[in-house]
Image (cartoon, rainbow, N blue to C red; front, side, top):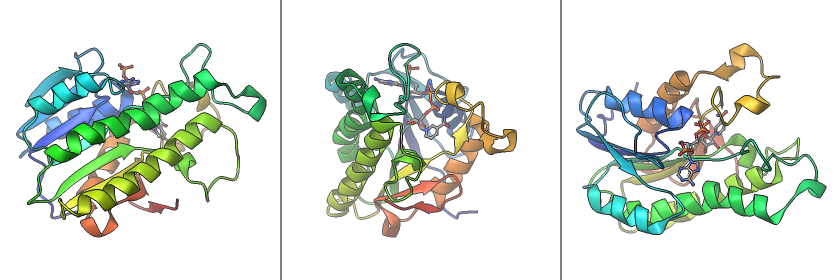
Length: 242
Ligand SMILES: NC(=O)c1ccc[n+]([C@@H]2O[C@H](COP(=O)([O-])OP(=O)(O)OC[C@H]3O[C@@H](n4cnc5c(N)ncnc54)[C@H](OP(=O)(O)O)[C@@H]3O)[C@@H](O)[C@H]2O)c1
């Protein structure tokens, strides 16, 4: 177990999602957490504990600026938003023939550009004088060197680009916030709305509950230190190569 104390002020974006909600409940129940900002598009995500609910759309900068004005100095920000399919036209591509500009735009807007705008508005609010973590949920399939199956063009590429941005932010923030860590996190295959249409073939023992994923990710977050900033870690704390 890590010796790091619990974060004092936490922001979770995508707090209405499967993993975001489990992370929200995990941190809201942790002694030492003084305020936890639950951000969702509906503004209704909540949990028992010191939770403040906020409404924001990660692709709408005005709503992110308004959110940033309502937080103090968060020492943990988790971006738990993401999209893979939408139940209608958007489906992960099996072939390059299935690619479309609207699908690329939709997936990159949520998985890459949104987290970038969150970083723009929240990273400057994070403390300069103590340890802090900015984490975004990425995915193992965003690893270029680990890609042996292909497919899922927009989703894979959006997560690879997200990983590049996190590396950039780690380099840039080290100048002003030497104790800040930027990291991507792969939660494992987790039983949520996002994965459900595609997880039928996943053996039961390999399909995590959101609560299990959240407790693994919280441990990974607690173990991070500035020397590893800019990398992507899986649920067990193992580095995923770029
Ligand atoms: N589940 C897995 O097996 C798995 C595996 C690897 C990586 N991940 C990653 O983990 C993250 C969380 O996934 P999940 O499984 O928890 O999915 P989920 O249950 O579908 O939750 C997705 C969340 O993203 C939010 N969201 C989508 N578009 C948004 C937008 N434009 N603005 C603000 N919020 C938006 C949703 O909010 P609304 O409630 O408002 O729609 C929801 O809170 C994603 O980044 C995903 O890629 C998941």
